[in-house]
Image (tube, rainbow, N blue to C red; front, side, top):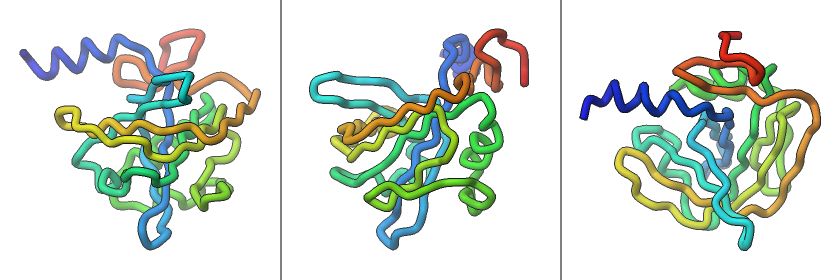
Length: 161
């Protein structure tokens, strides 16, 4: 199968954009952009996120470690791209607070899902991290940031922002 054709086909599925945050063993702040995110179960409350194995952040996702899923608003494109970059201070110029477990929560996001790692599974070139949801918060402050056909779009039209 042609990898580019496969990727382009998957791009036909519009997704929301999240930033996954956690803390490292030395309490350093860690964050990465992910659009491979989904609900998994209502009972128990579980979500899943897929993380590229090549990501420098992948090894910190271990059983029972806390992490946060920050669902971004359409006004948080800068946050999306800041956390998609490698090797930079991703939290520079980003407004955030810390959860009770010390995990960054990006301010003004659409929703926050606080979790602990339930399982980490192999999934080809990605890790499938399932999270046991501990707390949720919704912020009724706008529309979601959408990723479609390899670009950021508005919910009401597929035109580029």
